[in-house]
Length: 124
Image 1 (cartoon, one colour):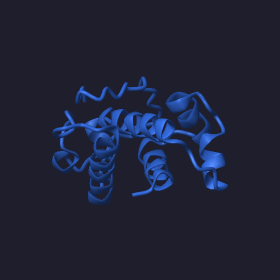
Image 2 (cartoon, rainbow, N blue to C red):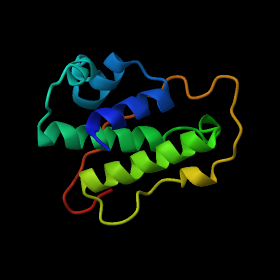
Image 3 (cartoon, one colour):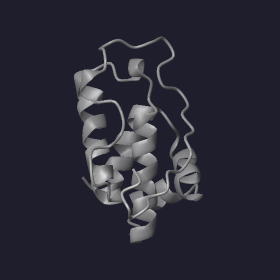
Image 4 (tube, rainbow, N blue to C red):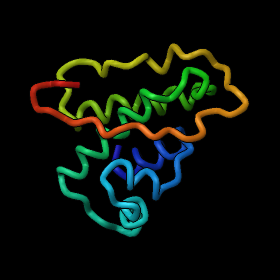
């Protein structure tokens, strides 16, 4: 999964505006817009974005992943982000496939998690 595909899926699952995503992940509100226009991010930016995606997806409430396709997308994002960030084991979050298939009226409207630092020692 490319970085832009992962970001687009995360934006759809978390219902976060692109500028908020860029600002929260790498302090660049134009990140998503620039990636859509062909910008090639460096390895450091890519790791920070994947760490942010992993934290964002893990922060979605159980009621936020109502459909099976949303659960599959979230699981794929977590696996891809764990590989890029460099986790040695499974991502320490709930398994999105086991989330009940219900959704609240509000859903996951605005999630603003902190950036997770990616330590090379497997501190995931």
